[in-house]
Image (cartoon, rainbow, N blue to C red):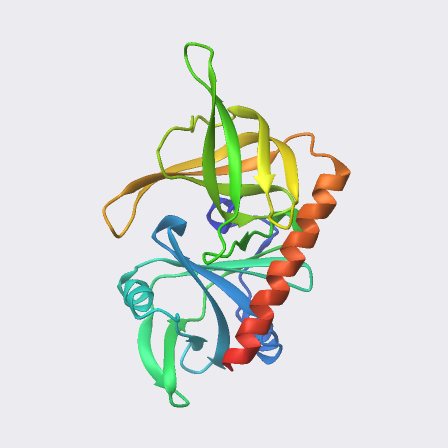
Length: 251
């Protein structure tokens, strides 16, 4: 589950044409495309959309975050990452910061139009943030040094059909890249529990706003069954519909 920072500048997936970038952003704006906005290495996120693209001033206007605290953190951040799925193509880009403004009588964010963006036409690269209000749990079986296996309950922070992101609040899980967790169980609610085998592809320790440290692991599915993959795809589609409906109701 690579991010756009892992794509080299000369990679064919990277778009640097100013004209093409502006056209794409305008097209996404007209279709009220939703973006996942993340800061602080993914520890904080919000759903937003483009309200205006101004080629002359090299800026675009975005919906502000619903939380005043999160909005303040966005304005303080010097790196903001964006990700969206547009016509089944994963679009990602970063900006160096944002200004808070009023736009059409509501709070908004103003950022520079990115110098480049990445387009990946592979569905499995698109990750969608999971609901905070209804957290999704994944139980990971961890083998201790004495050979005993203990279940560690983690919370998802994103999911794709290629893998998922786990938050280990107790900092118990092995974050070594390539480490494999067998016999995991993903609880998608509605009596849908999916058995999984996961391998660690990314690992970070993050200090939250409240001072607590958590571990975040980006994991890839290993030998996942087709039926399980279909259930995950249905879940992702459900989340997208709910987020689209919520965004439409806010406009």
